[in-house]
Amino acid sequence: MNQKNSMHGAIAEPLQGLARMAWDQAESLCDPQHGCRNYHRTWSLVRLLSLNGALPGASAFFIEEIARRITAGARRILISGSADTGLLAVVAQAIRHAGQPAQIVIVDRCKTPLQQCRDYAGMLGLPVEFHACDVRALQIEPVDLVIAHSFLLFFPEPDRQQVIDSWARLTQAGATVLLFSPISPDEQTHPMRLDRDAIPGRAALLATAAVGRGWNEAERAELASDVARFWNESTGISKMPHTTADNLRRGLEQAGFRVLQVTPPVPESSTNGPLGVNATLTDNRAELIAERI
Image (tube, rainbow, N blue to C red; front, side, top):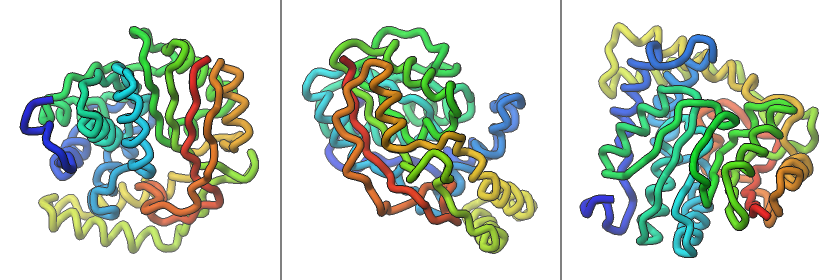
């Protein structure tokens, strides 16, 4: 990291420009077969305007645990799935906190968040290794640390176990997985209760805020429509069987990890994240730590 970004304190994340880039370029960067164009087009916009640019939930947990492991010798950190630059900002903050260098590796099958992260890494002067592929197909040198945020929600079984198995394949004995994830009370209960009636009004307010931040007035209707769709489709993200403390533990142990922490659960958070702006959660959120055996 260059000297101007090695000082103590928070690392700036220029989310306004990064959100604008995703809004403008997701159409060409997102693979139509993935169906992620609206998701990636609006994620940073919602985080900027509805959540005041808040970092992903459990950012303090990630920063503390990543920094601790860098201090203990971890040098390669894999971000498994990146909605935008939020997790990269968290890891950059942890590296600064540790005061030692580390190599960041980011894998995502979509080019939109990868381009956001590439632009942001360039601003920070951080060396980052980028891979545009499904993590299950990733072929890289082993990493010492894997971090993922609500990532396993996107995968039903047996795909979820395949993702966890890929983390095992990409690590060696002693490596760590740090995971923040919703924990449903059972595999059939969806973690999110969505307030659909509130969505049109909230989307209209966000569109107004976006225009106030430099989006074109001619984009107002499209902004409101795409953000409303983003929220209305949010419940489709979490796949069956829903993640529970038990099935996460089983999956990690089956892959060759020792689970050191699934609890304490985190029943309250400063934010439910961009998808949960119009929702309450039926679950707890768990800060999970697992070690490769």
